[in-house]
Image (cartoon, rainbow, N blue to C red; front, side, top):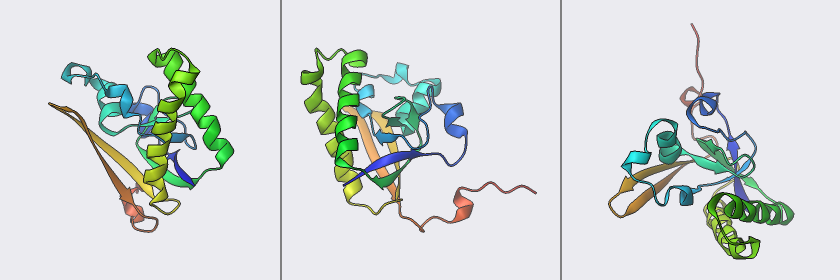
Length: 156
């Protein structure tokens, strides 16, 4: 079983997201957070979170990159509990029992996406707001597919 963990190529996430997810956190797309957004909501750091942000499941901050990683059943169950509690405290779900199926569905979606890829595959999300709602696309970069220069900054 696989899920995705936040990775940081550099410190830019700390500058563009409020808050930024920490490296190593388990993550999901978290698109539900934008379900009622309009163009007026897409300003500053909120725009960046909408356009490219994964949702970290510890800090509930955002990140640009995630990488596929193995997850244990116990870790997966703990994430369901954490996300269920987040739905209650942040989104007003009536209780944990009502929030649990939604949390399970969110994690199942991410697991299905990750199970199609090898560990260490990078995934990025690209979102846009359309007349009918949020359009979401995912791009993957397989291990060894990216050149170091794509991520490294070289000094003179």
